[in-house]
Amino acid sequence: MQQRLSEQLRALSEVSETLTIRLLELEERLQRAEHHLEQVGREAQGDSELPGSTGQILAQTEARLARLEDWLQDHQGARARSAPSVLPFPRSVAGEADNAIHQGDFGVDPFPDEAEQRFMDELSA
Image 1 (tube, rainbow, N blue to C red):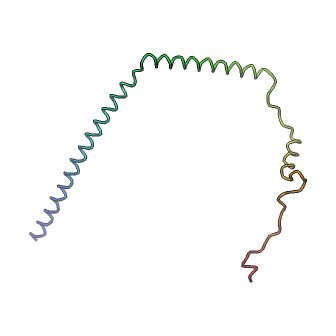
Image 2 (cartoon, helix red, strand yellow):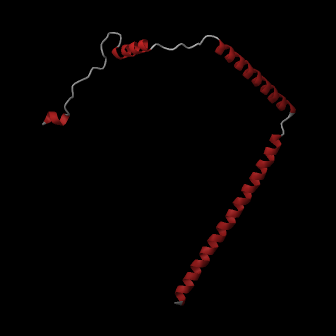
Image 3 (tube, helix red, strand yellow):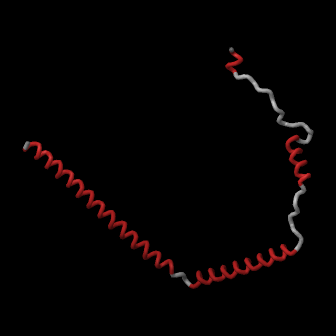
């Protein structure tokens, strides 16, 4: 009985040693990750402050986009007031075009219905 208890105690100490080592490794990894996040945070704060030239370029780009949007809205409004640019396709012509596609240029259906063919195992029997 004492032998069994001593073996269990030894196994328990090995498990606790392994867990302690893994816990220490995890703490080191966590410290490295926190340090990396701090560096990224500092870099992000530095990037958020745009130099004057970049701010000016962005302002000019916004103004240019606003002018283009106004121009497009004015152009679309003028187009809407004029005659419709797309006329409806007559149904009779659409039906004829559909038939012409299916029958080809020669008036013959390129995919005629074929009779059912027997399978290879029916032919050998």
